[in-house]
Each structure stands twice: as structure tokens, then as C-alpha cells.
Image (cartoon, rainbow, N blue to C red; front, side):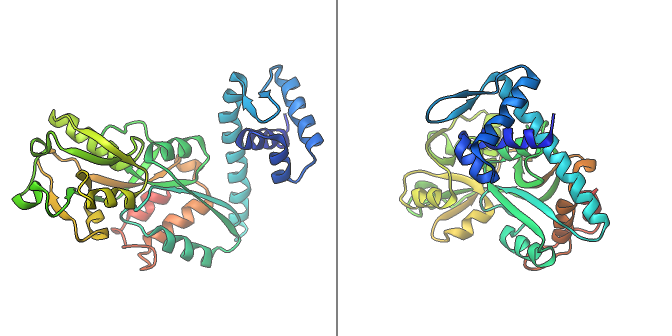
Length: 310
């Protein structure tokens, strides 16, 4: 089995189309098809179901995809490790993040990284914490900035960056705002909630906290971006339970502390693969974060760099 066969297979699986994959790989479509057929002959199993419009993975193809991505990630890490020993950081940095993550200024961090390591190609993916954890574990991402909940026992290696208390946002005319008091989960029973999709870290943390408190809540309005959530609350269509720093994005909303949720907080973490599999580019990025460069976000406590970079 040749590495080029695996690269070709992964490209077709990602694009679900032979022509687009061939264009991206800069190979002929006939050569790509021959490469996939050679792989199928070696494995003695069809990898794709082909139609006139698209191709989809067979069961054997889905099984191979996870292993192929892991193998290619390891090969890439090997090349990058050798380049790093030679004093040059090259290759690709694949980073994932949730929206509006606390404790790190992602854009500033990446700008500072590019200034120091111009030969590294940066790839950024924004998604929910659940999906990001899966992609780090599978080797598709070098690291990710995400939220961790108390129920996340199967996440990749993670290091805490910061944590925030739970905060209720509501319209200034809402009955909760006029009360002006610290709230508990029972005070929110029966309210209409605005929240993110279930894969998002804040949603998972809030669901866990309310379930532990024995309070049922109904999320009637689901969104996948922070500003849509704030817009809905601003129109008094519901209330939201969010990390505290969200309140600064819409100061006109009433922000009330939420207590009675035990020690539940919104914890921001860096998700990393096992220490031996952490790429040189990922190590350089977290080291840069640890320097406390103002462009990258607040500096962290002494000694955490060693734990992050392994």
C-alpha cells in the first residue's frame, strides 16, 4: 500500500467527487481512478459507491478513512519533526476552535505565529467542541480550543486555559431583569431558552448543569452563531445561559449571575493529541500562547507551557 494511494483515497472521500479531487491533487482523473482501483484490489473490497453525481463511502471505505487519516497525519508529523531538528519549521498547522472562545485571541495568536513561522501553512476550522475533540483524536487537527464539560471523560489530552461562571442574559424589560437578583436554575423553570446546537460547548455545559439540578428546560430557538443568539435575546424572544464574557458583546442586555449549579463553570481548554504525537507546529503555537504576547491573549500562569507542550 502506497502513501499516494491513501492520499488519493482521502481526497476523494472528502470531495465526494473524482473530478474535484483530481483537480485539487493536480493529477489526471484517469490516474486518480487507477490509484483507487489499485487500493481496492489490494484490500479486496470496494471503497466507494459511484453514481453519476457523487461518490459515497462503503462500509469498508468508512473503516479505512479513519485509519488513512491517522497514518497520513503521522507521516506529516514525521516530516515536520525532521525539519524542526534542522532548525526550520515547515508543514501545516491544523487548528480548530469554537466561536468567541475565552482565554485566547485566536486571530492575534495566528498572526503572531505566521510572523515567526512564515513557512508553515495555517488551516483553521470552526466547529462545536464535540466535533473538535473527535478531529483532534483522529489526527485531523493538531490542536483545538474548545469547552470541556464535567461529562467529557473521553476527550483527548486537555489543558485548562480559563474558566467563567454561568450568566443569564435577558431583555431589560424581562421579569428576571427587574428582579435584579442572583438566579438559580429553579428561577428559570418554564422560560423559553435561546441556545446553541447540542455539539457546542456552552450548550453541553448548560444542559449538564440543569440536568444535575433536576430542572427541565426547553430550547425553543437554536442557533449556530453568537450574534444570532444575542439578537434573539435582544428581541425578548427568550433568555440565554452563556459564559460571562458574552455579556460584553451586547451591553444593553441584562446580565444576571447564575448560582445553584454546584461547581459547574464554562472551562476553556486546549485539546491536544498524546504528547508523542503533538506536531512541532502545535508545540510552537502553544509556546507562543504561553509567552503572554498581548496580541495572543492574556498570559498564563508560570509552568503551564511545559504541561502544554509536553
